[in-house]
Image 1 (spheres, rainbow, N blue to C red):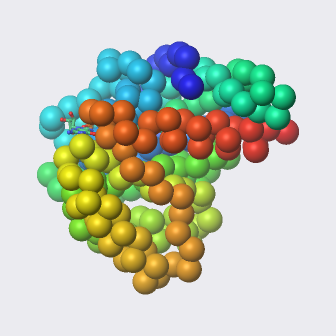
Image 2: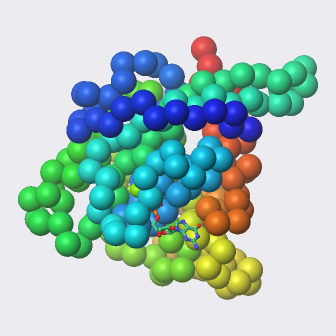
Length: 212
Ligand SMILES: Nc1nc2c(ncn2[C@@H]2O[C@H](COP(=O)(O)OP(=O)(O)O)[C@@H](O)[C@H]2O)c(=O)[nH]1
Ligand SMILES: [Mg+2]
């Protein structure tokens, strides 16, 4: 359960990111997939991360400090946690120039490979679309480079229950063409709150597991 979230800083490169060693979770995906909206939904604050109708706005690594309270540990006691949530720029923005896209790709790759605090990268996928080449390539790159990730289907409110289930099944089948195991998968909607608790609980479990 997230109690509080505050914006910290926007950084142009991984080397400029906060020095803190708090466990970190980043959201990535094509621009307009719903990254900022999902962060706001999870944090119960519609104004926290800037959302936009126009894709390709965020070009920086945005850090948020989150305080949450995990209940039901072994002693059934509430446990306070602090961690970072990161809103990354969207990849594959068609209107950007070749040079811009290349710079953005380098920045994203550097963040994924060099940010030691990163516990899990959440790759967001619009549930309405068939598997897109750019997403599959990125997912494969994560796998090849050993970057821990999970998949998050967004905008679940836009499809009926059965169609949604079918889309997710198809996506899994597509991934299993290349991978033996599936990553953790979440289905969410920032409009209805679908999947918010599952995602937060997952992060809280991971926080627990990385605690030294
Ligand atoms: N219906 C619906 N619209 C959404 C959802 N998430 C995001 N959107 C809309 O999609 C657009 C892009 O969202 P945004 O969070 O800015 O995407 P980002 O570029 O990935 O950060 C905005 O117009 C949002 O209102 C969702 O779960 N359901
Ligand atoms: Mg955004």
